[in-house]
Image 1 (cartoon, rainbow over the protein chains, first blue to last red):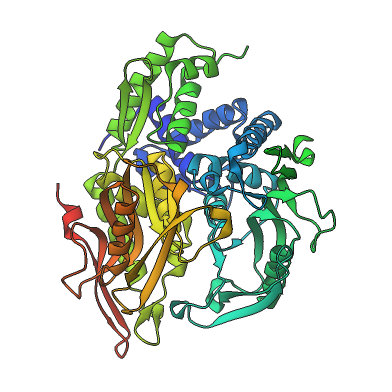
Image 2: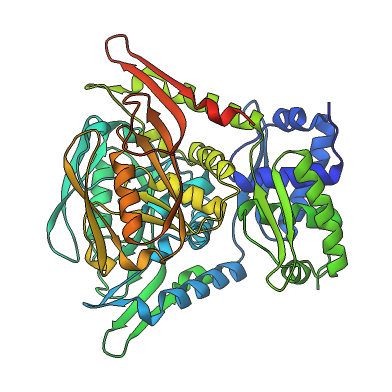
Length: 274
Length: 274
């Protein structure tokens, strides 16, 4: 069987950790993969721990016991958070995003996997102390954020639909009032989608009145799951009083001025404090 | 400024490559990041090249010239492809997936980021010799596959919608006949979404008659973009003659038997040959 040098194992280990953060890998798994003694792997992990700390990538944690092993828990430094949010602001404030009616074209942003990965990194960083079982969103624009966040947390995501599809089996539905349009809308989710008693993180692209987030929260109550947090990429400054409290926006949209062709948006200052 | 040991740089480099495959990083970027001479980085890259080859992770390619640098091009070994497809088959054939009417519940599969990442790895492996600008899908279930595939190709993805949304700006729409339901349906895409003359890879979760894929192909023609490939996760064995040719299914669904509660599904044998 092949043997690997320490350098090579370190590289392979970091690739494996980077591709599946928050997943617990057993020492046995690595030992077999690298055809190396557990003591050798332990020494490798010490080196990885040090480098992850030095580069401020997060933490390598060792979990003892039968289900134990090693896990990479990524989180951003303040500096990196600030860099990501500043870059996001400059992307969101490009004036050619203004669509007649004072809307903002954002599709290209949420369809760029690199940008969405960075958004997910900020979200995951902020909820790293919570135990979360599912990331929940509502179709369509929230889906990329949900999948990337779920990928980084190594958990499934769940997409609430705005209609009923036969392939979903039995569904639970609620009606809610959309905060911005004041229209009554429906959202549905398959009964199989969430286990009772589990904990969820809600993510979405945009929040104005908070009606959609309130709707999701109400639906979660029907499923008897606990909402551990709500993260949105962009939240409008007005109305100040949203239909929900305790949500975490990454960016605050202050104003879209169609005449002057300007978009004012800034990072949520709460994310830039320790 | 901080200095890093070779071990540490190797680990960091593999993390960076793994998190953003198919992206060209300049030597300057690494040189500044690690506060090290370019000759040192070149030596690191030689080690990385070797380990990537040894572990069969794909290839590290060096691109010369002004826009040059280093890029990690991942692709799977035949063995790994076979392992992934075999595992997928055992997940898809779980009998509790059968929904009255002979449908198959697959939502949990496409909502598992780890499974979708593996699906994306197989797709990307098979189209690694094509130059692709966008991954294209139609809402809703294809979206996770599209984003993960696009992430691994370091390109944007585009979601065709089944309705018109005001925030999309001007849209191009077509009507098509869904192969399975024989109903006339509409799909729309924002004019801004695709650049004329670009090359796309279409991905979707499921194909029966091929009507949806045909519809997407027709819409792509309206945008004057070239379809470089069509990949679907599951394609039904029947009808043998689909509305399109030249598509790549990962798995072939042979039969769902509601009475016997069995699902027969197998890997596409074309993927298991060199």
